[in-house]
Structures are given as structure tokens and as C-alpha cells.
Amino acid sequence: MLLQNQIKTWLLLLAVFIVSLWVFRGILLPFVVGMALAYLLDPVADQLEKWKFSRVWATTVILSLAIIIFVGAFFLIVPLVVQQAVGLAQRLPGYINQLQDLANQWAPEVYAFLGAERVAQVQNALADLLHNGLGIAGNVFGQIMQSSVTLINAIGLLIVTPVVAFYMLLDWDGMVAAADKLLPRKHRDEIRGVLKEIDVAMAGVIRGQVSVVLLLSAFYATSLTLTGLSFGLAIGLVAGLLSFIPYVGFMVGFVLSIGVALVQFWPHWPMIVVVFVVFLVGQFLEGNILYPKLVGSSIGVHPVWLMFALFAFGLIFGFVGLLLAVPLAAVASVLIRFSVRKYQESTLYLGADGSSGGKSPRAK
Image 1: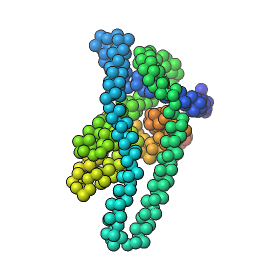
Image 2: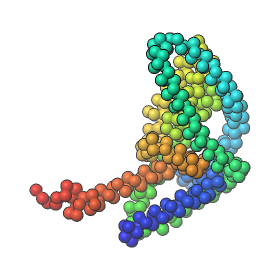
Image 3: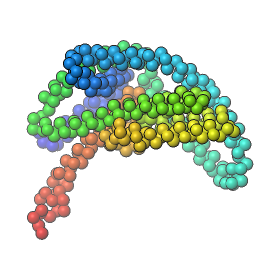
Image 4: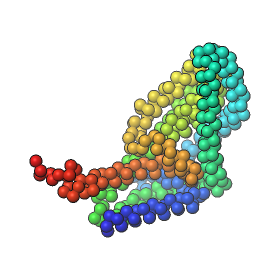
């Protein structure tokens, strides 16, 4: 098959995939979560098989433990988190008013330091930024809620997801072997190399990033609760769960925590400093320990493009798009790097004589 025909074939398959994703976006959530769960737990099942478990028993044991942990966490933590989240939402307008009162108290000193004209410019810029940011975020998440939070998805997550995960985990090795047999013989080794890179990237996304999110959620929720911050559990979990979006989880948690701390603890500034330090430590752990160790450079996607992918996929495909954005961005990164390597090996890059400088390699 000519290169041109290969490109047409892959582009056609990509178009079919995108259209299918858009058409079935309303029912894909439990299937996507089930597949991700199977991929996440496949190494554990392989390890149990090495310990003489059959694949059926390994799958049953793993999913049973996962369901027990999920149900236990749901009944122990979720009611408290929901209670705090509702309380925070109800108190948020009051907190904003109290923060404005504190700002008015500091206003004379700020005016004296910056001058009235500079202060007015800063206020207008902040107001525009806040208005535009809230408008974009509200539009994106409004689309997500409209397209995703349905009764079908809620039931599917509880019923369909475990079933999908069970059968996917049970047949995972067989599906991989069947897909391997379908690879073109001439290009099998090359395609296997690309798929191995994709597997490393996906492992970093799904296994590594899920671990980072869970650890950060536990750290922020525990630390903020121990400081005595009102609604610390809910704020900490929000900061941790949103950390899969670069900088967003940190900024949301930081702004909420410092705002609540100023209202709650002022003028006892040492406790405000403690809350500030919690987020400094969390950011240090994320950037220097957790992310490099658990995710590393396997994703290979710039944070700006990653945020763009999250917002774009979330706007188009809803919550399913948010789940698929990072893995698909990682896959696209691997394919782009492969394409660049192939381009650098081609005559288009090297020239007709095979040298990058346009001269024959034998030329002196």
C-alpha cells in the first residue's frame, strides 16, 4: 500500500472514530470508565496469575475488592463531602462580602502606595479577567452538565461499569493478542514499537495520574482539615481531584482556602500562613516527587495544549470528553513524534541523495 493510501486510510479511521464518539457521547461514560478501570487493574490481575490464580478468579477478586473500597468510601466520605460542599456554596456569597469588607479596610494603604489611577486600572483588569474567566468556565461546565449528568449515565456508572470492567479485564490479554495478529506483517515490528510507546504514555496517564490525583486529594483534604479550616475536607478534595488539569486544581484550592482562611482566622495571621504553606508543600510534592515518579515524561504534552484539549473535548463531548482528553492527547503526542521521526528519515527531509545537507554523504 502506498504511503498516500495509508494516510487516507488512517485519516478515514480517525474521522469515523470522532464521529462515533460524538454520536454516542451520551451513553459512553460507563464504558469509558469500565475500560479505564480494566486497564488500570490489568497488571494486578497478571500478578495474581503468576501466583497461580486463574484469570476468572483474579478478575473476580480484584473487582470485588475495588467495589468494596468504592462503596465503603462512598458511604463514609461522600455524605460529609456533599454536606461541606453545600455549606460552602451557601456561605460563599457571605465570604465574598466579608473579603470585600477586609479589602475596604486595607484600601487607604493600597491607594497611598499605588495611587488612585493605578488602583482603578488594576480593579478594572481584575474585574474583566474574572468576568471572562467565569463566563468561559460556566459555558464549558454547563455544556458538560447538560450532556453528561443524566439518569442513564448515573445508572450506567453503578451497574454497567462493573460489568464492562469485569469482561474487559477477563479478556484483556486475549484482545491484545487478537489485535496483534491483525497488524500488517510488513510493518508489524514498527507498529509494535509505536504501540509500546502509546502503552507507556497511557500507563502514565491512567495509572500514574490517577495515583497523583488520589494522593493529592488525601493530602489536601487531611491537611486542611487538621488546620481547622472551615469546609477543609471539601476544598481539599476539589483541589486534589482537579489536579489532573495543570495548575487548575492548585489555583482553585488555593484561592478558596486563602479566602476562607482570611475570613475565618483574621487577624490571627499565623493560621493563614499555615494554610498557605499547605499548598506550597502540595505543589512541591506534585511537581518534584509525585508527578516525576508516577507519571514522568510519559505523556509528553505541553501543559497549555493539555488544558486546551481538556476544555475542547469537555465542550464538545461533555464529561466523557474530559476523561478522554488527556489519554488521547498522550496518544496524539506519540503519533506526532513518530511522524516527525519518519519525516526526518524521508527523502523530503534528507534530500534525493539521502543527506540532510543536500550533498552526497561521500562528498568531501
